[in-house]
Length: 307
Image: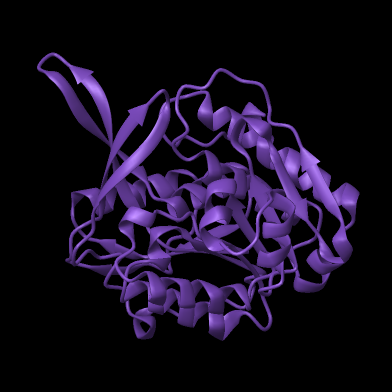
């Protein structure tokens, strides 16, 4: 099983109404989107998150169940659901978050249920790694489980959302030492690695922090991966008509994890020994499923039969 650990929130997506522009609620959040994507691709997946009992929390839970995601790891409370208001410019999304005292943000490590024995991989990332105290809960969970489970992290950095940059950088650095795979966008990489220039040099600098594999997504230019021993792999993006990019990276991550599972590579040793050909297949599948998501509005990952 793959356990997705992080935020579930409501994306308020702009839409035209009879009264002018309004916002329509859509279930979302980086980790939520990846869990949904994995479930729709047929993977055995569960999610751990702080979930509200409010009406938005019910929407989030219903969406997970409908996509085949196990929900027994939820930590429910009466705190509100996080809201993210989305602004779209030429199809590219920026976000304004409302997260104070939310069910997701206030998650405590002590409240998280025991990780099931059949969990092969754990996935962390998103704004849940930036917002305390929940961020510390996820970091503690990663630390407790990383010795015997594959760890993948996508920090999905939102600089405007970070309240204490020094603490955030320290938290990420600690989690990177525990990670087997770190996936970043090229913009994330520029933010994380500031003392060297050039994508390859920056990716190798990130790899030196701990992860065996670093994956970098490049938008319309595809994605590349940096393996142990200096091996580099790249794939082109899948041509498609872009409606918006909401959830694109999250769906890419779902494709990566799903393909690793299909290839029997969901272990620390398997990822470390992964061949160039296997990595190419993993990246190509991630790009394929992400192309479907960007071709339609909002974070709406494809089902396996749509591929």
